[in-house]
Image (tube, rainbow, N blue to C red; front, top):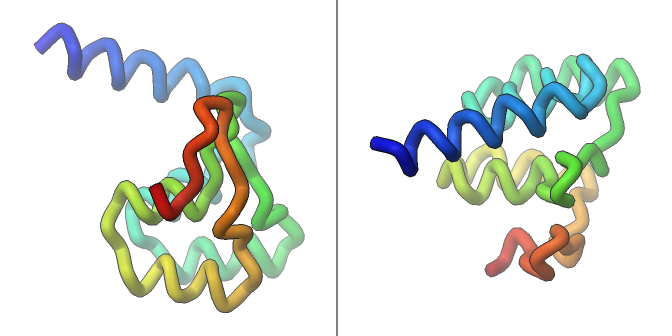
Amino acid sequence: MLLVFSREFKERSLRRLVDGHEAALLDAVRLGDRATVNSLLQKGVPLSTKLPDGTTVLMEATVADDAGMLKALLDRGADVNAKNQAGATALM
């Protein structure tokens, strides 16, 4: 239980450090809400949005195991080779 609490706390803390629209994009990707993702991207929220630890929207879609979201992000030009601070990519 402590591990789950720690991860949730870390995610909330990291999210506070990201601009509101960028946080909304990351949340929409996590929830698989393609309509919101498309709307935010059309409004100019960058596809290159990252958490402070370097986690990208594509990495979030990978963790969520959402093939449709992955395809949509890749079709829009998401960088498969972008690395987080640990050196991981969406492919790892």
